[in-house]
Image 1 (cartoon, one colour):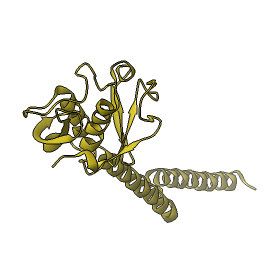
Image 2 (cartoon, one colour; image 1 turned 180 degrees about the vertical axis):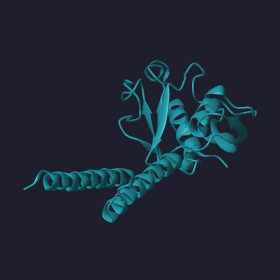
Image 3 (cartoon, helix red, strand yellow; image 1 turned 180 degrees about the horizontal axis):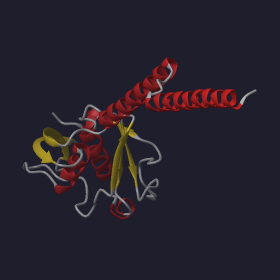
Amino acid sequence: MTISRRVKLWTILGVVAVFLLGGASVLGWYVGQTPIKPDHDEISSTKNKDTAKSDQESSNEEDSDSDQPEAGPASVTLYFSDSQAEYLLSETRDISTSHQIARTVVEELISGPVEGNHYAAIPEQMLVTDFFIENGQATVDFGQAMNALYPRGRAAEMMFVYSIVNTLTELSNIDSVRFLAGGEVPNINGSSYDFSRSFERYEDIIKE
């Protein structure tokens, strides 16, 4: 093969190589610039998970709201003892609070009545240390004061228990009430009541 033919052959091969390399570079750039579309099934799965999570969060919020009455102004019925500690007398009161209404009505019971011949059934030294509602049951925790200041005598006990129970069950989301002393079942020797259980509304001692 002559030198001139060899030169031509190498020239042609060089041109072909340059063309191939240029084409590969352009293809690589195009692939890098083109977004990869996710699989349709993957999109549907992600959307379904997000929807399920949103529905669950909404459900939890609704459950929480159903057990926690909104704060704000409200007209509530409170029950206080009569002068003989035989019956409960009702008293309507308008309250406005930034806290849970159910807890506030117990604190209103402690503060005492405003009408004549109505008497507080809860010692004024008592404080609500914890309060929550779950599945229609309100739990009132008076701390260790529950054991120390609990009224003595069957009549006084009945007024104490049911002034709270009947007042709280006036609220639509409460069916029963449980008492605690510092997170534990009250330890009250000689009490007429079993505080290991919850208490339901007792209409018979309400005087019309």
